[in-house]
Image (cartoon, each protein chain N blue to C red):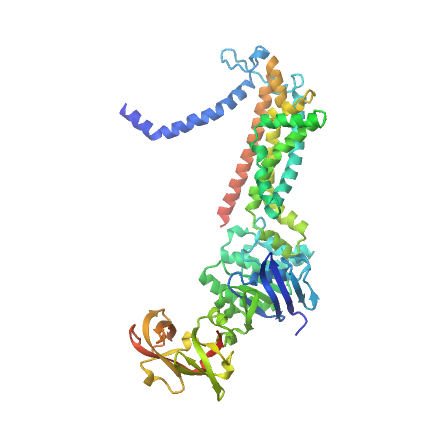
Length: 277
Length: 361
């Protein structure tokens, strides 16, 4: 008994750590498990009962089996990619302006750029809806895209700006001193150094757009442009098709692969650095 | 004046209300090692950046070999810079850093490879071509920055405090190295520094700058021995400056009255010949004697009391309080001849008038 308390005293921090990790990962594990379950009916898609668990590959082999599920998935990917490209380009340009140039209103721009991040989505959703109705823009892909680009830009700016701010401004001058035109200096020196920040910003923008429900819900209006989160929410009322779990798991694995790849890259680079120095 | 001289004519640069460079006119001869020396904020780096094309003059003209480059874009100038922070491209290896300029100029591959290899050998980094800048020491990075600029064979190489980030020992080593390389390649070097010893060690010609203007320009030894102003006398090494009233001129000498002492300075070593002036003598030109009686004939002398003696190895640095209250610094070389004076001792400080100079106060 004495031994147990002593063991606990030494290991309780570690135990607590495991409990916390479990807290973080159990929901994901449940979705993964359910992606291999054949539910008795649509209303029991989210019932994890080991007594009735029935293993199946069907959800994975027949991902598009449920009506409308893959259409909505493609719409989300399409909106996500479009919003990412536009927001990343615009956001990167804003970051360069904010870091490189001194102009009137720079300080306030720096502060205001945070505003969309700080505004509750429900507020932004309603105000965008009001705006679109006021301007008589028909709801659908365009309004969703405008809204997504808008809330992604701030995140892109913050991410790219952090990378740019850490860059020695002399590098640009050094490149120009070595006969590089401003465009060559950007392409050969500045862009490669800022690229990791831009890629990170793009990934962030895509995941924000792909995931968004609240704002999208407002700006979709009555159109039939149903994104993936909208589809899940809609089918939740009628019973969720089990393929949703397979798609969710796949999405998780893809983003996880990105994280691992990033980690491996940094680790390999520092190992190489350690080996040669 | 040969063809490739760098001429700065009446150049002024203002930032808002601040005048960084004030009507500067300067000719830097082709092939010389020229140092711009001054405290921070004196305009030396701004001058360099205007030559590099990284700043545009507010007024004036800069020509290189007769060609007006005042408003020429930096990437079109036959001028390269070694930056203070080196500004090496961190994502490229050493060889690619050095090859950058050649590639922009469209040099062919074989020539580029050969020139890069030669240049890396010149700066003794032949084995380091594939390393990243982050894997090099400060001194090695400095040499990469030098190689990256020199490989382009510029008309003028600009060096902006290139040794500032190195420790003292490495700095001394690099000073000799830079001088060797300059002699070898024969390119005009314009070196900006706040370190007077560095400027004097390396440069053929030194320009002392203050508040956007040149205080004095000349060969280091010439300027050191006969500074043009009190500022130069104090900035370039140390000086004892004694306030003196000019009383007259006779036999090629200017006679002054310094706190009751009648002293003479050769006319050729006087920047002013009337009114209130400062009589200057370098600490190593001052000697100590036990009393006025022991002062060699022809030497000027003042009496004083030793207040401090600090032994530095090669010399002993004495502080001697003169009767009028200020202290004179005297360096006595540790040559084994002079016996040490102790604090509190009454001494006579004497010097040869030929070693003194008179500047405006």
